[in-house]
Length: 510
Image (cartoon, rainbow, N blue to C red; front, side, top):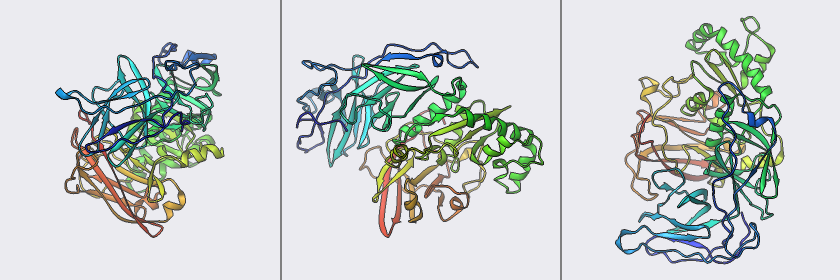
């Protein structure tokens, strides 16, 4: 967290709330940056990955500040709802932030690039839209009906067309120190630990700060396929919603993945028969008596997620995130390196061999998620998420995670809950889990629990080595544009715990 510069802060207040003082620091604007790499042609690695680039990041100078990193004591004040229906706003150092604080305590703020206000989750740091092309990054905290918005030193660089925001956590004037500072990807999601290697949709780079600029050196293993980068970026956006460290693409893992994908393609008919007979692990091993067997493929096989007849790795990631057994490996806290492989429509992703080994990387992953009964939990959809897909992967999943009849396309988007600490995973006793329709406000009444299939660690999850304690697959797709509340009730080390969170389904599409 940034160092406090004064004892005054901006507070956003609900009905009947009284202001209270908090610390504030200088705000750094989320401004447009300077350099964007040329678009690579299809099938070619991005040209920008070949040489070092220097990108100036945007810093907001407060009036009277001698240097961009100087803390400035700024008086922040809350503005109540004004006559005539004008939206209330709060004065941040970088400008005035409009907001909507509802009677139930729900806070909504505008975010860059969105056509409607976004619901804020307590403890979340996100980019906010100040209007007139100006933005800032603020940390939102809540106590009862009082919200506070705290801005710290933030530097934003536009890399390959996406905004990368670095957060100076330790107040040393640097913004991208690995595992010390924080990072926000494309101005959205939660603040995650800054990675040693930056991955964008078109490249991956080692980062160095030079003055007020970010130097990007080609990461080892340059020439990563554009499809692999796009898929890794999608994974990292999902992980950022939970505060998890980003992953990088490891070309060595991808080389083995290509070998295993070729084996799967050559043996597709045989594998289909194996799965139909209940042998769900047949695709996660290679037999030396089958065509296409290689030692490289054998190394990759147990570590890979598999998708057949999928047009891209990015699409495959979306399919895996819409399943039950294949989602958790993408959200593992210790995951640091991934690999991709493909062969004629078969796509695989290595999610097990690239675990973090640096102590600081492991510690960063273990600090992600949300507090739950003295531990920390990873839940998906993420708390406060909007535009959540409505349905299960229409291709289905093996093994089948639901007991009700009907095709996978008729089921709802799966809900998952997992503890980060492996000790917690062994010390949880399941009591109850349910999903219900609910308004997006934190206090609105919920509807009746929805029908669906409940899975827990005492059932199929344990048999297949899943890290998830709870899971729920609704019997029907989520209703478009509607809010939901998920409630997990369990016993952790002998103590009863209830964890609840809310999210909203996408308004249009599946």
